[in-house]
Image 1 (cartoon, rainbow, N blue to C red):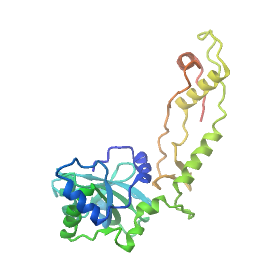
Image 2: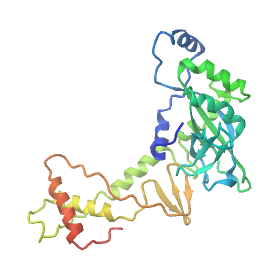
Image 3: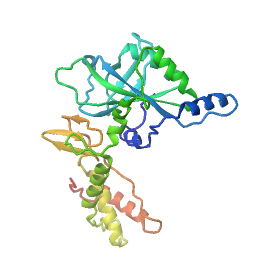
Length: 298
């Protein structure tokens, strides 16, 4: 599976995972009818594998805690044509899935029989320099379940499915559960933080445009819009979901941690309703940037 989409958006899609595979009867019925009807586009989670990310010493990417990882096929790898590289939430390579596992999964990925997603369940220990355990969640169309399961078992891998008691240990469930411990937040907690953050900044500062350029008098909401636009163009605040803790920067959504301050996200979407004077507000922004004294809005 290619990890081309935004990591945060990718993580947020976890809540839509269908975690209950079909029964054996449903699986058989689907196989019987697959030749005469078009396959469903919906995929289901068959189960997960607990394997290792290896080769950590060769790459600069790091894993800071319970974290989503991207699994990307690397068919042109000169050392292993079945290679599956692992990217952290900042899309920096961490290592590779161990060869014995990649040898089984790569052909299934290449044939579009499965898609895979990974989660590192625990914070890596300091002494663990060469490998990190990872859960690989495997998704497939219903009609491919039997074949995929057979190929995985034939490859000597232990697939943990809903038939196993340990299936509830899947990190796909853990990610969504409400956690009170300090190493993470539930999605509800995160959305609450976003709402609180928006509320704190809801009182926008009204800003006057340069009077020698903009002759029209702006309404209060236009002046507030202008203040927000100028703030967004010049803000040096941390991006959404980032917090500074003990000298490091932590993404509360993914648990990714770094010593480098994330770049600010400037700009935004100016989406007032029709008829509220967006054109004049934007012309005022241009005039302010070109002729006005740029002030600090950090």
